[in-house]
Length: 448
Image 1: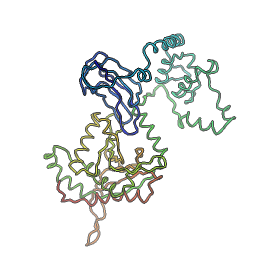
Image 2 (image 1 turned 180 degrees about the horizontal axis):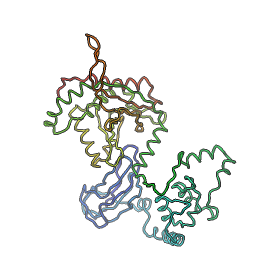
Image 3 (image 1 turned 90 degrees about the vertical axis):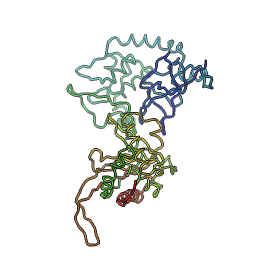
Image 4 (image 1 turned 90 degrees about the horizontal axis):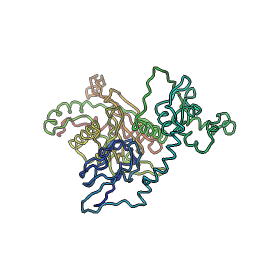
């Protein structure tokens, strides 16, 4: 009998950890190779971790909601296969998870202390409101009602926030209980006004929101919180600048209308506008390779491959960005199949970690929701993102050898956000103009 370590696989570029969301197998269950053992989630994708071997699950090393680093062992599978499998060494097992004897020895006095300190569930009062998250933390840490009521809150009307209770827990063991209440901010400001201002900006929301009895409090999802963090981080990292251009896509509109039925019959795929736009973006990136870069500190990394990220909306309202690898090497049929496949699997929550890694430039279709333009946030560490607006039928001036005329045309706005630290206005404008030129120059007689 051999033991196999089921480890958290690499989840993609810049992803170092994942959260265990659900164990699909229990200790003692038989497992077949390629059978899913557990479900995990990151800020980019929810996925399953399959077993690489046949065997029996003999040990689970992490619980649900635990955060696991890439490469850490998730579980131990006992196998009879005569293959070379990784056997967990005693030292690595101690580093990843202490023995149950040690855990019991440590947790026993802690549990007793918590049970003594917490005699009743946390309740709201007329003076103070506690969110479900704060109540859960208080329950887990053995904080009593009386103890929680003494914590100074940084929220509106002294409301205790997550940061307040976590800060209290962190300092709890270092101070006597009567000194746990934070000192007034005026004392800190008197010593160091600059530090006090910075700390206040971090600890307190700029626009605190009061809560009354008729309001509903909804905790953000794990993915939602991580996305929010990355969006704020991107805005704070990159100097966002936008360039806008309007493109006449009448030829594309008419051409697609003419060929879409025969394409669907022949390929079994719908021909949408997205692969057409992606093809134009890939061509423009070949023309302007300094848009296909990443910034790492003071180093500019010029990407060899053109991997287009395609922002897609999930049923729960969150966004995910699957990647079309080597998009410049695909013809329109291949691009259509890649777009449809990724979009379909994104909606069904079936994307794999490899599907969302390695992007070098991102395209988002804000026109799907009726917006004519937008100012998207750059997907770090990339330096540009293009928003596609809705296609509209509008009156426009048509230039002909016989003179100018007013006609009905199909037009759309392209909104290009780029990192002004490394992309100047000329390059940012020329790139989006090149995309528009490829779209406007579409061959209405093109075969597919």
